[in-house]
Amino acid sequence: MPLEISPIGYVQAQRQAAEDDYWGGSSACITLTEDFGSEALQGLEDFSHVEVLFYFHQVNPEKIVTAARHPRNNPDWPAVGIFAQRGKNRPNRIGSTICRVLRREGRQLWVAELDAIDGTPVLDIKPVIAQFLPRETVQQPPWVDALMEVYWHPEMEQPD
Image 1 (cartoon, rainbow, N blue to C red):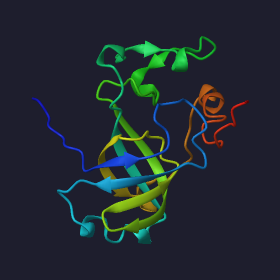
Image 2 (cartoon, helix red, strand yellow):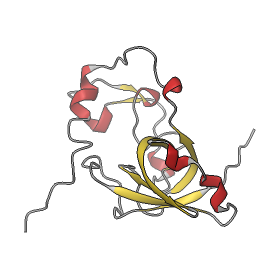
Image 3 (cartoon, rainbow, N blue to C red):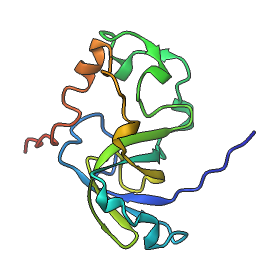
Image 4 (cartoon, helix red, strand yellow):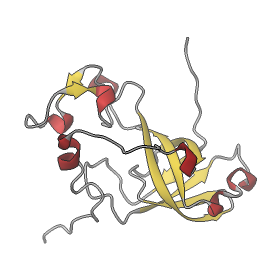
């Protein structure tokens, strides 16, 4: 059964291309489409964080992964299924990030550290509610720590 989803808004960000690391310190603005009034965001400024669901719109359909692979093609890490990693070349190309709310103005919501590029279609925004977070310790394999080591570090300055 086909599923139709329309974007609720779009990301305005400095980054124009998807990159693996250095998303720390970034900020982005999500502007709702004309289908929504400012009241759709009303009350979000009372939450510290939101979860943003978005569409990896620049992923070439031919690059979609449905099986196991080494994350970031690093042979030092085990091959794991696409659903055991958060890579962008997913079957439905849906991304999800928890972001800090910076401010809301009309149909615009500014967030910190959304790892989506300029023009990214936003599928949904949900407030982060503590009671929906894990109630026990989160467990993950060691390769994830290595992969995420610089993911949230501020963008590195490029040499001249």
